[in-house]
Length: 136
Image 1 (cartoon, rainbow, N blue to C red):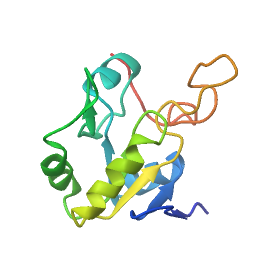
Image 2 (cartoon, one colour):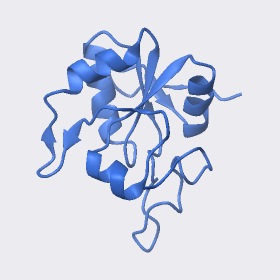
Image 3 (cartoon, helix red, strand yellow):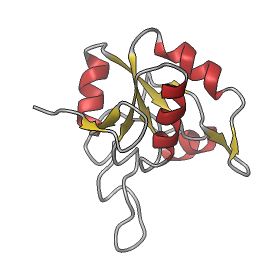
Image 4 (spheres, rainbow, N blue to C red):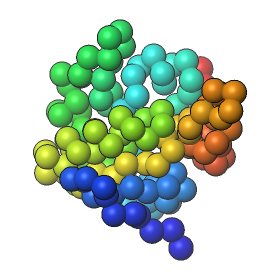
């Protein structure tokens, strides 16, 4: 049985991509993709995920609409937050928690860590584990 890991900071915890997907399928959680619009467009996205960018391209400036967007996405459920590698989603989970939401970071992110050739997608991540995703 998959269980969440306690957080290393002020948010609910860290979950594997598989556990996050189980929660979403059971309607226990809402999946929120916090990557930039460009990342979702070029790299791929999870169908049905709420899209609330933590930062936006160019310049990776903080998104003015994050707070309202993540609060609206929650719909009274816990949140599982997804970014490229599981780093930005930690910061986003901390902010969502400050807003009074139950927020979890998805470990490994959408693409996972780079391999020995500095390429993502070969060492963990949402796509690596065969979870639903699409590309435009």
